[in-house]
Length: 199
Image (cartoon, rainbow, N blue to C red; front, top):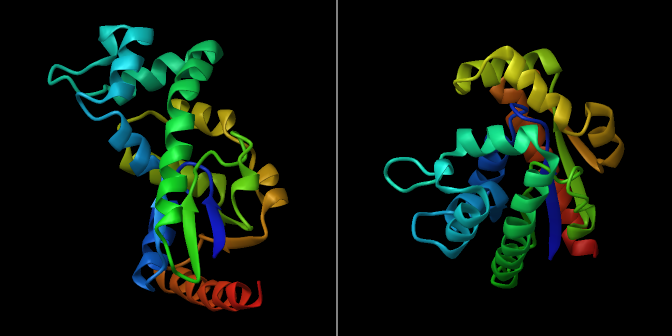
């Protein structure tokens, strides 16, 4: 089975693109969703994170306060590495489990920080959703309750647009209409089906 890693910066439109592929019948493995499931209240991973970071990272209902945790790891590279050492092996294990159950010609694994976490080897192809930085900023400002400065800081901490494009086998340009996006996805869907038959 052909494995395509889908990546892109914050606010680039990865979720929309993965939904469009999903609508064409492509299996989607989303590492963000896996990460959220892993830290559900009562989970071993959340217990481990709480031990390492203290109970202040929990909300009143016992769930993970993502904004607080993001703030901590954003200001402290050591803490970030600590969190990754807890979550990344568990995420990789779950991705492998989901992959082993698939029988489709190809699948897509959504990995937002593919380049940053050096996971390019997980897939046969890398698909980058590319969008101008001004559009990223505008989208995330609308979507998240964060200031432009906070969003710009997140963007600066991620791989640069050039770094992502240099790693890409294919690129989706998300700076037009939804219809244009659908056409690009439909074209790549055919391309990946052809690749899967050739491999």
